[in-house]
Image (tube, rainbow over all chains, first blue to last red; front, top):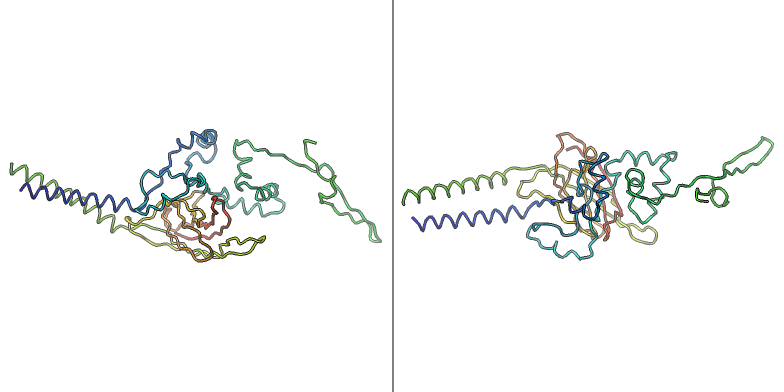
Length: 181
Length: 143
């Protein structure tokens, strides 16, 4: 009877072990602990957890953790261990317009006030999110507003009367200045 | 002594039965996933070849819980799928390595499953070796 019981224990142990392996092999959820992010990004953490429309979100809702902080192996394919040490940290980000596509639609309108600001941000070596973050968070952004100091018109006259055309060109060098000047 | 052995035997058998039942339950139960097929072509732009997501087809499938895909470690460069419902990302992080022009098939697990009939925005992106998004396209599907 003892031998039989030992056999059963062994069978049970092997079965439990195999099930752990099988279930561990599939579908690991990347559990991001926001308090880890807070250590370096305290201002962002405090702002996002206390104010605004995103208080219910956690960091990895928008940023994929890429710093090998996986507490358990993701399947038995160990290729994830081969990620170079200089892999960008949390480099995969959701764009603001992914969840707010209506904004992107509004920005297609040439008369939309923020279109130029957004489009210019795309030319810079920053994420397009910066254009949104500049105004919609407390993040310090070196934002230099520009305004037209002069308005230039090309005026011509013919037999039909005056032809007035607004000259928007910056090439004149007098059309645009900024507040700092 | 014999009585204790019988109790042990019964306990072990019951535990095994529970485990087998749990295993069978997980094996038999299925959950919704979204299968995404994205065609990516490399086109010349500014003297460089850049990826362009030319077509996306997405559909709903079911997969058993033991094989259910969840968060997959980031790939650099990689093809990523994001699924957005009512302003929230609802899928697990899903990506495959980007290797150039071709068709990429991804099976996307859903962290939160919206109600049947919900329209979901499917976004396919290509991110470069630094994680920067260099191409994207979107489509909508009804779950």
